[in-house]
Image (tube, rainbow, N blue to C red; front, side, top):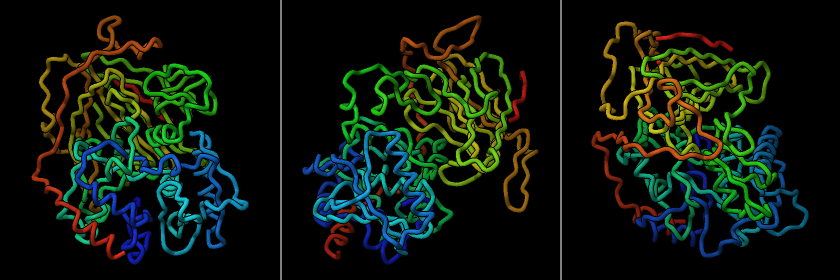
Length: 492
């Protein structure tokens, strides 16, 4: 379940696993038995695999209770997965196992993967579940994806606070064992459309039940834009999509071969070209390029506004070695509308650090990658950021808990909302250039895939007395049994 736990009625939530999964009792019992195991899995892959995938296509039908808006949303989700995977869909004729999309008032929920024992598998897209992010979330369940926070390795990425969670819903935070799920070698993705919001099942809806270990990734959690790149990667591997191509090509920067056009790659956001070795094209002609970090801070202001009556977001993409002074966007969980994203990790497949809320104080982030794709996005309103970027030597000490600026004179409150001033800054630096060209300029990753050297790991884990998640077997059993100073502006 995503964004609003009240979308699914409490009566039905009590009968669903993790808020929106209808799961057979034998499978749930298996999950209970493996709840304490530490194995790598997130796509549904149990002893019956591959019978749990839709090998001959996905037959589907619409129930008359599904609204017109709901149908359009489901069809958009179907088109998305057709475009980005090898999975095919077809209107049901007489197939005994199929998906039935309904619009009753039960809310948003689905089964996980293909279940021949059910035959008719209901995917509920009730009132309030029509946004694309929700319909694609539920359809991804039906195709085989579990929730991201169910992964064995989630404790390295998020901290869960049991005392902030309704006790009767603690079982929803159980980890799913290796006999039920598969990660296909992908890293944990807080920006997955399959990830809970920070406030899921919280006693106080304004106090998060989950906090990212790297606090700069908190804004990624619970996005409703749609499936992330890694969601797509997992489904492609789950359905053996690479087997559709008679030959292999080499993709750079985490790209994968496109099963619908074997001559080109599918690329992570921020990258483009046939082999993902280039900059992704921005939707705006004048808005993209490469910025080079020097030891002297340089300053940049970017603003982007959504196109009138446009259905797709406008994007502005730069590759930079990056100080962000201000953010103005749509402050919502997941930062999926008006926001900025910095991809600071070496693995560019992972959703980058997203920011959409006014910053309460100046922060400092050190990139562990020499190339940082910056993605500025606007779907409805406008997004504006001001930042500085510079190169720092690799032996410079870094304290993730230190505020670079303690000057709050220009930070004010307006009707209870924090408004930033010139001294409310966010700083991003890099210690790891790839090559030098005329001093400390940084080049984009080369087409030949030259690898960069490793850098020391930056430990940004928070340690504020997080509660230890208690053992969940008892609760689960009960459920089973009871049923940057050079300045220039770019305004778009």
